[in-house]
Length: 108
Image 1 (cartoon, rainbow, N blue to C red):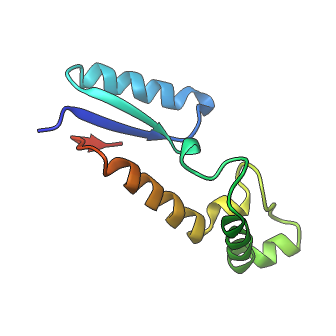
Image 2: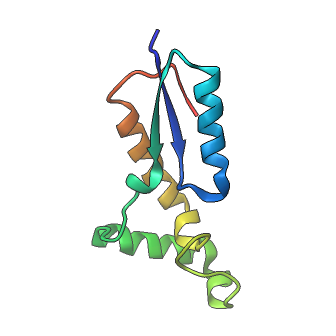
C-alpha cells in the first residue's frame, strides 16, 4: 500500500491549512505528506487567452445578473470567475493530472 498522502490546499489563510498539516503529520508519522497548493496549478498571472475568454463567458453565464447589478465582482478572492463550473472543471482536471503521476494512500 502506498505510504504517501496528498494534502490539497489553497494558500495559507487563517492558519487552518497549517493546523491540518500538523494533524496529518501527527496522525500518520510513517507517511510522506505531499502538499499540493492549487494556486500552483491554476492559471496564474499569465493564463492563456482561451482560459481568460472562457472564464469570463462562464462567469457572465452563471453570475450575469449579479455582475451587471454590481452585487458580485468578477475577479479576486471570492470573485465570480473562480466560482464557475468551467473554472472548477479546469482545476479538477489539473489536480487529477498531477495526482496521476504517483500512488497515494489517500488525498485530503
